[in-house]
Structure formats: structure tokens, C-alpha cells
Length: 593
Image (spheres, rainbow, N blue to C red):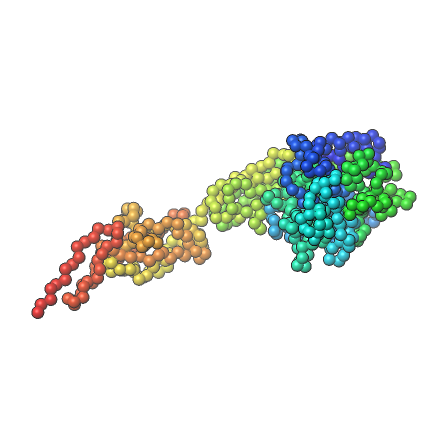
């Protein structure tokens, strides 16, 4: 992940010098006119200006609290206190994880981690006000953002007649994921299968947020796509940095807490917009801002660890203990990777419809050459191909083993033949990736035979009674979907199309002596269209050839038309097809008196 500026410095956790540096970094991270100003007043062309377009929240205010400087630590075997900020309310956590599972099926190439949904839920509503939801996941009270009337915020006139936000004049962001009504109308989901799409329900809202982030075929395992997705939710550089901070924090560990017991956030972006004297994480001033837009007294007692208890807020590292916030966080696994190397990938080749025998294998290495574990490696199919990884995904993310190895899932060829690329990259690092050439060849057969030995005989000018059927096999097994060509040839030594004798018919009924684009069925069988005979009696050859070189030659006999002994009955028609030379008709004998 790119460096995240603006990481909040907890009160009392760092020295004043470090705090000053952090505030300077926060200020430096803000492009003029980008963060927390009305949409119409943003400065065009600013270096960090997010892309234009609507946002899920209407760029509503959000909580700016940031996680502790230290990563959360799991509960030791002998007990101890978990990091309070890493506790997620049970129902809310369940909603995030179920949304990730549903999105893995509905949007397999998007790679939405539940931790990202949690990061956005934290920033938007403090996980539904610390998990104040009922058993079905619906908030106990509506969560509404400020009125978007242009007074310090974007101006969005009413789009839902107050159905979601109760305001028939302007819109307000609604629910734990803070969707504006116009966005919910197109992006809303039913995450708990109750037949309703309710923005106040965390299951519905979390799933909707995931679908919204996946728009435009984004792959959130890609850093650029991840940033674009977050900025599409709220077009603010500080918002992006805040969400990324919580995403990284939650990836390092979380635990479940009872509903209603989640840590409540303190600071909101509109606190500083309306009172420039406030600084991020500062004390005094407005206290907590309720999501309905009315101020309430500070809720310091809602947070564990106050009241003179050691630990100052339940956060580790205070009270002068080692690691009190001055320690730099340990580098992430991705940050330890110096290069990506091949780990024995073989030839990537397959016949259309088959699985590739080889699999892409890579190794992440540190500067010293040792393998780096727990690194996320992204494998992506690149190029004009319908080949996919097992499950239908075009891209997948695999975590490296203790030896630093990552192996891509089995790759399955589609029907499109030709070459394409499988690309391996390290998620969260701008390192040179590895490209592997892969090739799909057409389905083949190495043997072809008629399914019947019955002679094929037809009287001149008539239709063959039996159709030619052949079966293709490859290494003794039925060869399905093999491209095949059937040609009525001149002779066993001359495979050019014949200009007389038996023929097929096209859709217009015209004679055709070459059929291309034929394919065997699932059982390797191919039944050719009906054959017709012109007036030229004789023995003729039909040759059927498959991709791979399998060939069978079939003998066709055309007999002379039978003569009639009844002078009143004219002989059979001898009118030739359009592609042959007509012959003079036979004049019947004149009957005698």
C-alpha cells in the first residue's frame, strides 16, 4: 500500500514534536480545494483531485478518526486485553463477511476484502454507531448525514420524495454505509434475503457498498483500482487516506465484540470545515457530532479505559510503557519484498476446453534472498482470450507460503485459440511483475472412422438414402468439438474438389462439394448433411479431415438410372444440378398401333 499520510496521532500517545510532524504531513497530503468542500467549489487540476463524477455519499462528511499507530495484537494464550479499536460489533462484522462471500460469487474478478467494507463502515458511521442494530441488522435509529443544501456541503435537491431520508427538499446520506437516496435507487441490494433493499440495514448496505466499489470492472487487488473505488465513494483525498489506514489496520487483526459495544468515533470532517481552529485529533471544541447533524456532548465515557484506569482509553503503549507510539510500525510483508522471481513455472499450453497442465509459480524474495511469507500475489489473465482460472475468475490473489511461494490456481482454456499472458504482481508494491506466455491450440483428433460399414450407393439423379457419420478420437478417447472439413475429391491422389458426381446442398439448394466449419459433438460424432447424385454414374470419394490430421475416405457409388419397359412412363429426370453440364434427354419410343 502506498504511504498513508494523515495517520491520526492519539491524544497523549506521542510527543508534541511527533504530533506536529504528523499534522504537517496531514496538511501536505491535502490538495487545495479537494477535501471537505462543496462539490462546485473544488479546484480543477489539483494534483490529488479525484476523478470527476458522482459519489455514493454525495461527498457527505465522515469520521476522520484514525487507528492507533500500532497494529492490533491477538489475545495472548494466557489472557490479556485486546486492542479496543480492533473490536467489530458481531452483527456488523457478520454483514461485512457475508458481503465478501456474496461478491466473490457475483463479482469474482473484483476481489473485495471484507476489511475494506469494514474500513468504509468505520469511516461512514462508526460501524452503525458501534453496532447499535437489531437482530436483523437494521439500525435501532436512522443514521442520517447533514442536509445537503449547499451550506458547507454539496447541494443535492430531493430525489426520493423523502422516502429514505425524510427530507422532501434536499437529500441526506442514509444508513450505516451512508448512501444518498439517488445512489441507493440504482445500487441498493438485499443482503439478508428478506425481500427488501433497506439502506438502514447493514447486510443490505454492506453488499451494496461492495457492488458500488466493483463498478467499471474494477479489480480491488490492484492498487490503482482500489484507490479509484474508494474515491468513487467520497471524492476526498483525506477520505482515501483515512479508509486506507483502517483497511491496513483491520488486515492486521480484528476481534468480535457484542453489538452496541464498538468504539465510537470522535471527529468528523465537518467539525474542521465549520471550525477551522480544530485540528485532527485535537481536544476541546465541538465534541462528538451526531449523524443526524446535531451536536451532542463528548462521549468520552463511552470508550473503555477512562476514569483514571491505566492505559488511557484502553490503548496499549501509554503510561510511559515501551512502544508508546514513538515506535515505527513494522514493515508489512509486501514492504519486505525486494523482487518477484519465477519458482519453476512450466510450459503453459492447452487444447481448447482443457485445463493447462502447468501452473504459474512465483516466489517473493527479500533483499537478502530469503522468501517472504504472507505476501499477497495477484495472478491476472491478460489478452484476447476466454481462458480463466478455475471458478471463472480472470484474476485471483494468492498469499505466499512460509517459503515465500505462491501458486496460481489451475488455468482452464476456453474455445478461443491463440496466445495470451498470465501476469504475476505483488499487491501493494510497485515492483516489476512477471509475464508468462500461454497458448491455446484447437481441439484435435488423431483418428477418424465411419460408424457404419454399410455401402453408400445411389441411383443417378437421386438422393443417398444414408447419411455419412464419423467418429473422432484422440488418444483413444472421444474428441469433442474438433473442427472438421468434408470434401468430395477427384481421386485418392488428388484432393481438389470434384466438379461432378455426388454433392451436398447449401441453404439455397445449390450444389456444394466442400463443407467447412463442421465440429464433432460431445461424443466425438459428426453426421454430415444428406448427399445427392447428379447424372454422372461412377465411383467417387468423400474425404473427411479433422484438425490434428485425422482422415477418413469414404467411397460413394452412383449407378446409372434404371430403364423403364413401359413406353407410357417417361424415364427418371436427368436434369443436372446447376454446376454440371446438361445432357440431351432421351426421346421415348413411339408406341405402335
